Image (cartoon, rainbow, N blue to C red; front, side, top):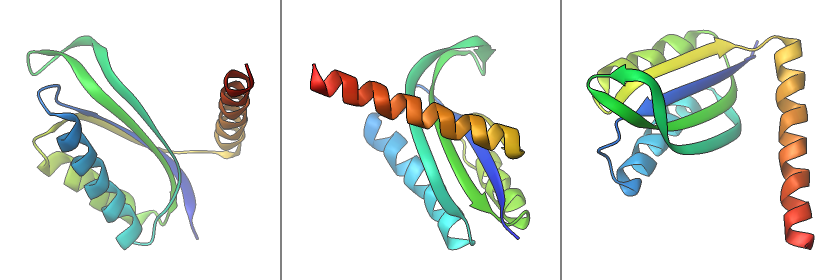
Length: 119
């Protein structure tokens, strides 16, 4: 049975945009090659951290929402730990309320984009 998960990772700010995209593709490949299905992705870009991590005050944030078997999470988090470019990550299983909220948030974002295009 597939569960719904959401993962956010923070990449070191010294990377170029191309390097960040390569890293994202790597983690997308891990998910897809191990039975995961990506539902939604968001690139939050370069943001200030709440507190310094490894003497860095900013980082590239990226969110991936996906369906996957529970065994995939251990593989994904192992890859996060092995990759020196990832300074923090968090993966959690979404319950039905979190999944409903996420769906509602995506609809609101798409409506806002449509309003901007129509103006």
